[in-house]
Amino acid sequence: MRRDLQSSPTTFAARLRQAIGDEAIYAFARRARISDTALRSYLKGSVPGIDKVVLIAETANVHLHWLITGEGSPDTDTSGPSDQAEMIYIPFVDVAASAGTGVLVHDEMIREVIGFDAQWLRTKIKGSPADLSLITVQGDSMAPTLQPGDMIFVDHKITDLRDGIYVFQMDGNLLVKRLQKLPGSQVSVISDNPRFPPFTLDLNDTSLGLQIVGRFQGRLSFES
Image 1: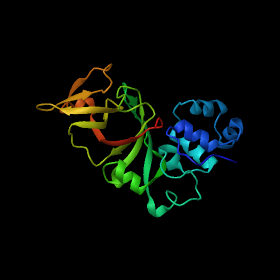
Image 2: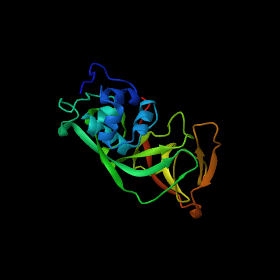
Image 3: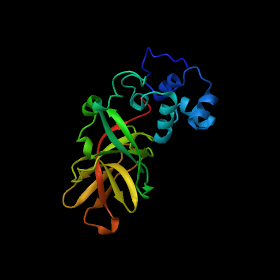
Image 4: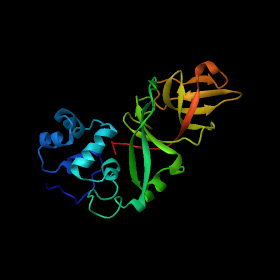
């Protein structure tokens, strides 16, 4: 099928439109095993899950890295991200980190292993790739820094608290918040969205079930 490869669209919706090319939306959706309604919503700017993005990339025969980031060439028959020597693979973990009130943690499992251009990853994301995983943000309490549907890189090696954004488990929920150390064992839990007030927790309060999962090291956004 024909698609314009002369430009690299800056939004996921535009890259999706380019990937589909001139094929009918209903026909592409059927081949990708995605509902026609869902595919049309992605074209209007809604955020797909990573499992759907993988199906779209496979069906359109485009690089997953390009579809997610806009970096590199979309064509799988060109040199670049398809070369395994230049790829770094990061596991996508099937749990949601809530930037709202919290999402219950169920059994964690790796849903996909996503390949990224090594140069892009080392330039954009801090930390050792071996210590990173990707999880999805839900909720808007960390907006505009993090948006619902963003995939965030979490460094699981960094569990000691410094001021910054962390993914942590508390009361059986998985949260992503900005943490600020206070005197003693107190920590201020801050949302970047001013609609959500900060609160304080005590690191010595074992009833909270507090566990630091890792430090935020970067994000992938389908909005850019």
